[in-house]
Image (cartoon, rainbow, N blue to C red; front, side, top):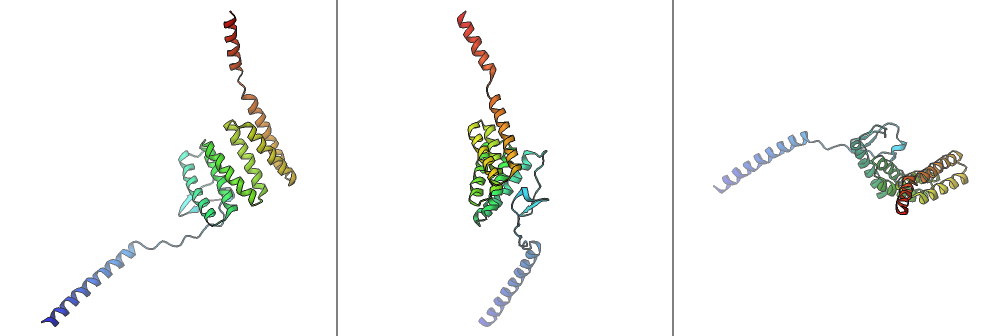
Length: 209
């Protein structure tokens, strides 16, 4: 009797195992393991001609007529690349990622964040002796500071960028920095509001009367 029961329970156990095995096979067919994602070789939007793929997310190059939502999506993708490059100490590429992020935030008029990422990018480009990128960062950082009203700091950045470009024989960059200095002078001149002065004068005339 005992022997018969043992055979009976073994048969039930084998049948149940077979059923679960078939269910598992069916599940594996519906949910295949995703293929390994090859890491990209170039980590900068500015140096990519077509598209940048990150976990099946396509990041199109920046265009003039983009929505804020589209730019936000790109900023998330570039942030992931920056984290990856910083984690694996690919600092030069991370520097370009930070400057790309700064440009995206500038388009969203989030100037404080744009300034911060340009500063991070510039710190790395200095350490990596990437003078071309350092000059670009300083020039763009100055434009952000002009919009934030930090004229003197912007002037210092432009002078540093111009002097570095001269020392490296980058005449095109020298001309560009001088143009931005003219823009800075114009911004400083328009910062004085003559209507305020006139209002004060009018007030003093009323007091005199």
